[in-house]
Length: 504
Image 1 (spheres, rainbow, N blue to C red):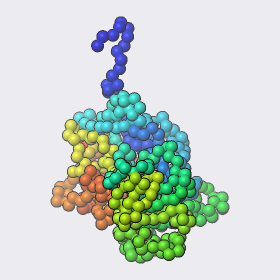
Image 2 (image 1 turned 120 degrees about the horizontal axis):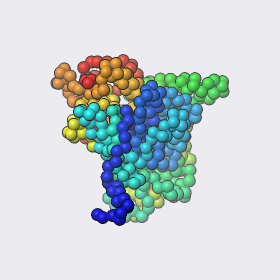
Image 3 (image 1 turned 90 degrees about the vertical axis):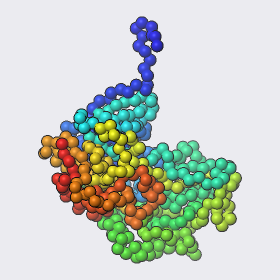
Image 4 (image 1 turned 45 degrees about the vertical axis):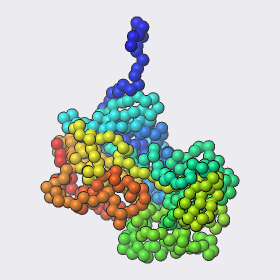
């Protein structure tokens, strides 16, 4: 290529540019990444850091999920951060959660550390250099960047945001209406006066149906099998009482946080120790909220134990109100095929629809599908083990955040951050710059178990993704999926010198 004198050649956008070095590189600007960044600034103000996110804004799931009525399925006193009092209702809408995260970002001046539309594609560890080299593609320009960091903190969550779980049924191509998945909700979809079929019975379906029923002609929940539901009030009566007393918000936050943690612990223990009693409690709590004569056995009696899958939260029983008012109905059956006008189910009935919402769930991905290498060797995570649900065997200087299934995600975020904090300080005391989770001689005969034991938790999105995720062992510290009540005791006391961490 030739250029005129004094004219620079046009830049090749595929050329990789150096983006600099930081002490800690956080991947993900959602609840986990923002929480990690807050604690880094507070506890290690001397360390440099950056946050990379492939989306064009903050919030992770709360930014990408924009379907009608999107809200938390955990209370915000435990889903909110330990350090940041929640001042709203116990169950909050997506935009309220984003506003809360915005406050944290503003208070901690995190905006200048966040790089949006920066998709991490590869991460390479060099033992010789004692650092990670992270390859990034700018989603808006196609530009390629290269960051280096001493410590990589994966806070990207577990959703595959680009590829939701979308089953294919016969005849979908001949359906003349609109088919949408909640992960890709069209901004211009007006469902006023429309006949809606929502396929699914989980938390997303339970959220969508009452929200859409307000404007739709009718909404039908089409489920293959029922889920468990619980209908707490949107605002806890204790919160109302405490706020009437005009006590500091920090006190209200802490009291309600402890109240909800105790409630979650009770439900979890009951699901393990007395599942039949918990089943009866959940079913009986729904009966008075349903229309007279409703077939609870057919439409609301799951085939699994309580908490083998998530219990869907229905604040103030809004799903049941839509059923009572005739704005919504439930069909429990299998899908035979899509027709031009709707869906034909196993009984032969055709459910006519203008819009079909496939609330069929999502797929998981291992660390955002980033290509990891250690000293030039690709990392096959399916052959690696978790270290306390925080690090991965034989992967140096890398931590990750993964929340709870039965408790609020953020309860574990705080515990993981505390453990990483201790680890950083312990490395400093030892004069070490590298830490590697490593199997000990006594772990050589350890039984390798799947990422999730189906007897413990067997939601569809978990079972579908077992083959792409890392494994766990049969003993500490190579296990995860413990409950918050256990980890609140175990993680703060975890021995960092038990031989499972090698320091250099």
